[in-house]
Image (cartoon, rainbow, N blue to C red; front, side):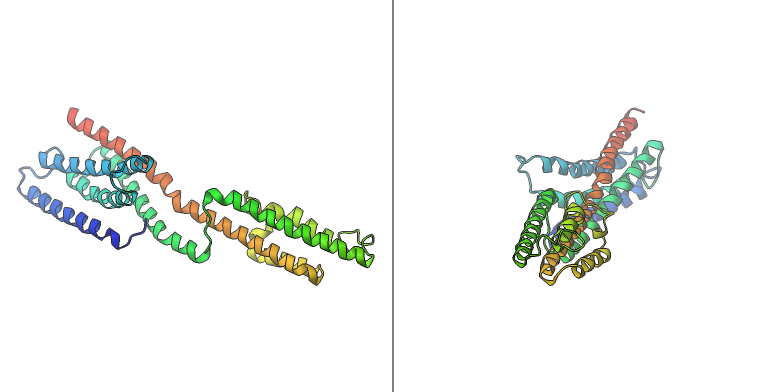
Length: 290
């Protein structure tokens, strides 16, 4: 989710609510006998408000999974999740009157801190990585289409190599040298085919071989230069094409890594958010009955 001008109304609304809540807390803290506490009715009101905001933020996952639920767009829920979810933090602080509380409350604080920190990291990543991906990888591939793209890449490479080797075989036959060039060391067709089948083709598959020399740009360049030097000039355009395919596969791998990093924070944010709601329910039950 990009932070742009469309967030301005939400930011202003959230800031206004924060100012009102802060003013109410200051008045309550100064006038309440015995000082502020989570067991007073104003303290409970802050707690209820914070809990409702957390529940609202949690409804985002329900909205994403419910295509028939037309109440607000996904964008609207994302913005509400961000701004109102953030507003729940000072309300929790006002509910607790700036105290840690017992063991359960401490766990609640830790879970809240992790949720907020992971959410902030997620927002930063979502505002930085897509732009970096666009600059480095102009043609973005959807992760689900990676395997199909690699299959097409291999198919085109197979056709180019097969066509070049067949053309070379015809030329050798016309020149009467086809029977003499039988060793991969002297036959450019066999050398190109062996290089492609045994070295490059496995690298182009969807299962990325990070330990392959082709995964390193410098090693890959040196490998292709050696291959180019060992082949006749009429093979060089094929080598250039194969090197371009190799670069495409490295870019796809980089894109997959960036996509993984872009969503990795959710592996922390979502389960800890669920734990936060569980701790909140337990806190409410213990506060009411004990």
